[in-house]
Length: 277
Image (cartoon, rainbow, N blue to C red; front, top):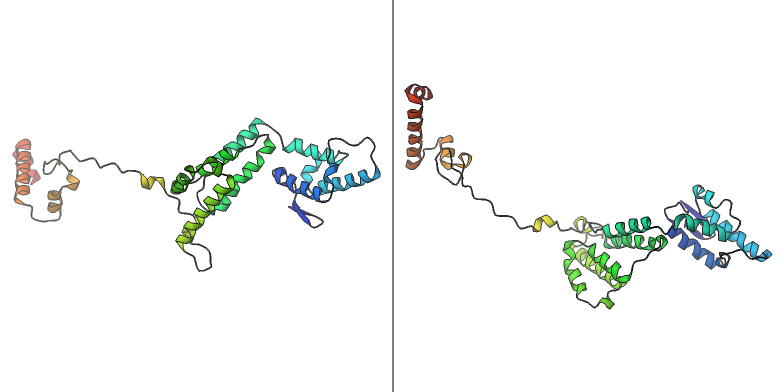
């Protein structure tokens, strides 16, 4: 939900967008020469001019929050008090918040879509860290960005690992990530509408399972119940399959089958053998 303040459109504060709301509203206050009103304390003697500016700042802040957030600032008497109340409500410096944001950042992985969207999703979490009372350094952020890439980008990661650490700024690394993504898109070719192909848009992330070394199949060592030879089972026995299809077996296979029949006859006796026939 948006509200228009003069020529400015600001997304209303809803509790989940505090850092973005704070940045935009502060920019408006600075531009309108109202930021000086957001001071730690109210002056002992409030001049008419100060009160006029304070009222304008209070109005701007009040109109830029959703109705559900008004309860936090309803009893505030100055714009500074409003600002501090909202900061205490949403910019809590808690260990739990820090842990949540860091786990979310470290867990982001590039799987599909554009590289720019992937990078933005990570930087959005980074922006929230100062509000939780912590920050992430350049080196750590570079490492997190590179770790978020799939195995198919290992060439880029290796190339960047060989560079001097001083050269690996966030801007440089994200630029290289975007360049590599664009190169892959161009290699896939363009579609009729000017966009890249669906397969490229999904980035064809390499399935690690395809790179696993297949274990050699275990050689069959059991004995076939039909021909009595080792190395296969009856279901794979060529002699048995030929008999099933009505083909004439080879002399070796006939002798094996005959011996098998005699064996059954000797074991079961003449009566049982006759029944089998």
